[in-house]
Figure 1 (cartoon, rainbow, N blue to C red):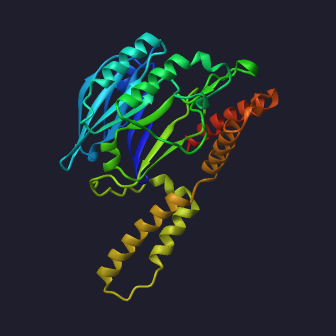
Figure 2 (figure 1 turned 90 degrees about the vertical axis):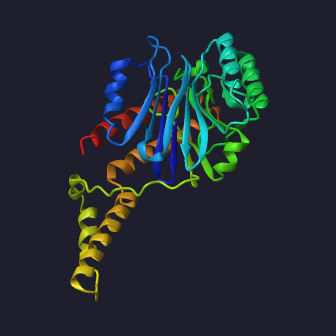
Figure 3 (figure 1 turned 60 degrees about the horizontal axis):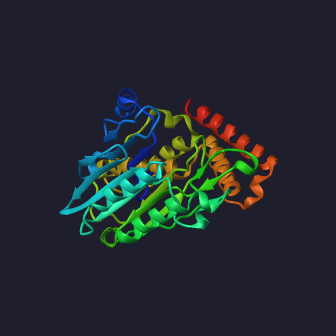
Length: 324
């Protein structure tokens, strides 16, 4: 789960990490320069939650955690709200207990929940198998949302966020991951969009929440020029174009203008001048998304083979791209 402000990622919420203390410290340590984090260790291969956030976002305080839920209070500019990241159990009795604990948070608080709820809320949120396999958990999840006056976010992209990756008639899809919030949170964050990203190398799809108007301003971002950018002609062209732009000002003012224009051109190139490998990766993700979002025709064996081939190609391109 990813929350971002505009084009700037702000929170990363990872669930079912299956990570011990050493793995978590090694992973989060790579982001420690600009990011803070909180985590719940997995129990063997069960569960685990990691939340990372940008340090310039505001004051983030860990207030409570359990085996399945991590609660953070986000404070900035006299505005506070509660972020609850959930990795729900697959056992119905434990799901019932977790829902009761989540319901204990006062409805007067500004609340936002995300995670793998391991439950659907309607027949339309699954494909393959009988709805009877989901009905008890679906009833519990729907009741929890209704009783706590929560809003289940809509989405753009594939209908389902989980697939068991089986073949033939045993293949299953479901929407297990979601964003929930109460009206108080919605009133603060009016403009947002939830996107289900393509599922690659994992049984769950990432879900990406873009928030276009946070109720506070971030610190101005520092521009960092990376050396390897100059391996690309587009970056060099951006610099040449900036320094060849006409200027009738004084030499010092012109120099300042050229530096500013260089930064602007490189940022624009970075945003829109995508490397050819990135384009290939994006095209494969779109193709996977289209097939996964199609009707039950994906049940045919040749389409399953084709989807698996796309996953393999996607993994190879990611490894190749990491070299650059």
